[in-house]
Each structure stands twice: as structure tokens, then as C-alpha cells.
Length: 483
Image (cartoon, rainbow, N blue to C red; front, top):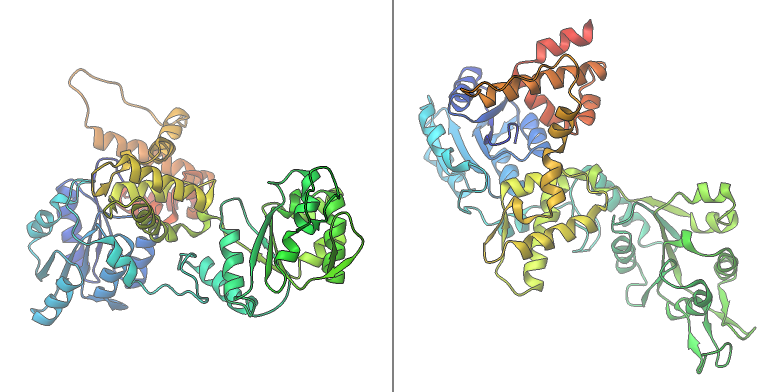
């Protein structure tokens, strides 16, 4: 929320007078309201912030307001939306209500109707009106390869899916690079299942999970009696993947001696089982994955340069979750459904504050971290059909308040915190003043660059812009940066 404890509403209308009238009424009723006049701006704001409510006019400067309604309810199924129009068209009213709006108002709009209609958007207290599963299922996700496991429609994911479409049919060796938890094995499986090898085995080998003394036999196989405990001949992972795909995860953990043998196997397309010198021809496509920069390891002498170039034929970078924040609602709902079905319980939905906490978190463990958090939320929500913020892991809820807490712990010297008189203070106005001073200070530090200031404040850029508009500090910020 823009103000903790206040419900947030986005008002999208190209009629300046009507828009400002609605915003003023909402602010007067205790809401935190943001405003825009175009479909493009509305969509951008919805990507960056999970508003509790939306008021949108049918006609925007650059498009149909009902398209914004669809986007909003697809991304945030619990959002309450009101549609307005400057003409009494039954057709538009029916379309709006069918798409999930709670009301359709004809202009000039009675602002008290807007306020009343949005009264119960107060965080976590409204009933479920739009079931998330149906909304998510209806959303056209631009996936470029056939896979149900890779979820996302953000620009980084669209680029990734297009790359996979090009790479999958080829026979090239592929190197996947990305942080832990970004889904490298899922991507490897997607490449395999969309290749000409799809009907042949997909075999995974984790270099970090197998002790060095056993890794060679596990990868190349061994003959009976090759070493103590080798009571029978056994084929290795490379041989098992013959005709299909071998996925080598955490290839950076592979010891140098094994790197040499792997290089030869890739060059000659043949292996030798431990305990014999008899070569065995194999035809396996190799996909390797790493969460570190192999070039740095090559420079440090801990990874063979010739093996690096053999693996790095096609390199695919997997984006961290923090770089695809607008995929979080889709991923979260996907994991909620998966967890509910896996545990044999009725489907649940994420409350708006819970979803906002997910979107505010930095996700150092990426997608795997998000999935674990969702499973925790499903378990801790008990018999409730809604997952509230307090059901999520504590660090998520705490982190959503961390930027303000950290800022108040290190308050700039020119910010004066109020004294605490016996008769009390106006908390909202006091916090707004502190918030204004902090934003101005960090805009000054960032040289007026809003994106850099947002990063310093641990906010999205669109959230910072909303705060600037709501607090009326746009002109001050401009003057400060110009000074």
C-alpha cells in the first residue's frame, strides 16, 4: 500500500475534471489514490503495483478502458473495479459487469457511489469475487515453446521463450547461466521436449550432489570389479542419455580430472566405463547449467578453457525473479493451485496484501524461494479459502515494512521526527511528511533520477511516481534536482 493501512485505488480517465473529482473524493474518504489518463500509463502502473481498487473509464486517450479492466483482473483477481462512461450504453454496462466489474456508473459520476463501492477494498477483508484460477487460465501467455511448467509473460520471459524456440530443434550444446532457483532444469527439459530427441531419455546429472570419488563412475559407468563395491557392471548417465539429452547441472562444481574426461567425451562422442579401455559410442545432446560465471573460473584456472568453449556453443541467460517482477502474480497463483492440488485441499486464493508482500520482496532464492513461500502460505492459512499476508513466511511480511523502518533508523539530519504530546498526533499527516522528506532526500542523492531513487528506497519506479503525485512533491523534486 502507498500508506500502510490505507487502501489504494488507481483512477484512469482522460477527462481531467472527472478524474480529479473522483481522486479528491477518494482521498477525502481515506483512500490513497493514483491517477492517469491513458491505457499505456494504467497498464504500466498495474505492472508495478498491486492496487486494491480500480476506477476506469470506457474511453481512454489511447484505447478501450475495458482492456485495462481485463488486465487488472487477470493480474490481481481480488481487485474491485468500477467502470464509468459518458453515455448510458447498456451494451458497455453488460460488457463491464460480465468482465468482472462490481459496478458501472454513468457520468457525471456521483463520487459518493464510487467511495461506497470501494469501501470494502480494505486490505484482506473483502469476499472473493473473481476466482483466480479462471482468470489466470484465461490469460493468453505468449509461450513460444510447448511447456506448462515455465510460467511468465514479462519481456525477459518473452525473449527467453523465443530463444528456446530457436534453440530447441537444433543439436547444439547449450549452456544455461542463471542464479540458483531460476529454473534451469525446467528450461533444459523444455528444450528437450521441443527437440527431435523428445521421445528419447532426458537424464540429469548434478555435479555438486555426488562425491568426487563416485562422480566418474556415475557419469561414465563402470564394469564389474573396477573398484571396491563394483559388484556388477553399470552404465553411466552419459550412456543412459544416448539418443536423448544429458543435463549437467552445476557444471562449475565438476573436478578438473572429470572435466578432462567430459571434454574428450564431447569431442569424440564416445566414453570409456571405469575399469575398461573399450570405447563406447554415444550420441547425447548436452545441456550444462551454472550459477557462476565460468569465464571467471577459466581466468582463475579452476575450469578448463577448452571445455568452456565446448559447452558455450549456445548460451542462454535466465533472468532472476527480481528482473521479472510482473510475473510474480502469475507464478504465485500457479504455485497456489499446484500446492492445493498436491495436498488434496480446496483451491485457495491470495489476498491482495499477501500478493503485494510477494511483489515487494527481493527473492534472493528466485522461483524456488517463491514456491516455498507459497507452500508455507497454503499450509499456514488452515481452512481459510484466502491466503492472508500473515500466513506467509515472516521475512516476507517484515521486508514489506523494511524500507520505511530502515529509513527511520537512519533518518537524514534535516528530517525532524515529531515529539509525542499527551493529546496525540495526526499519524497519517505526520507519516506523509516524513515520507515526503525521505523521498526528496533520496531524489537529491540520485540527482533527480527517479529510477535510481526508487532503487535506493527499495520501491518500484511506478510506486515512487504514485507517491510523488499523491504527496505533491513533483515540483519540489524538480527544483531540487535543478538546483
